[in-house]
Length: 237
Image 1: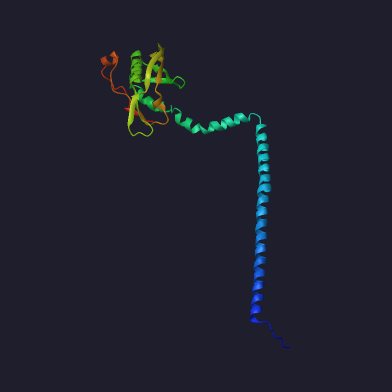
Image 2: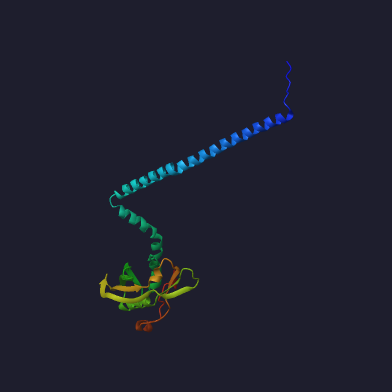
């Protein structure tokens, strides 16, 4: 069977262009409809879905808040939690009173003027130290008091390489003293109250050492054959 195409070439080109035009128009319509549909979906998501999520989240927050508020003494727990945040700062500000134990060998005169301490009590409220103990004579007690009056501490403050030196105690006073006999040996029992300087026990200060200048301050010392007063020249932190 033989078919003959009797359409001229111009007619064929025209029909071909019409088909292409229809295809382009159809594609444009579908793309436009898709874009409009996407915009509508985004609008519905924004207006409905997100608003619903916000409402649900708000209700959940309110529910959890009501549950917390219903807990007995919740305010106390929250206060403790806030106080925990300031613990590092409080730790830096606390006193390192263990340094006093390192100072004791320096502050205790050498025999025969040495003392035996039975009680060492630090009272941070009024910045004082109570020394309770015994010694051989009142002259030895005087030596110990003068030692406490003159003992010094050197330390470095935060951010400084220069050591600062000052007396450890602002004041030293004998609160009580009495002479007695223990095992037929004459003994002086005493209690001394000394007011210390805060910087000496400040945890922020480092390289803290104690020392006592070699001086003679009592008539008993001036009349003595110049004994060595101190066991060692300094004590560490």
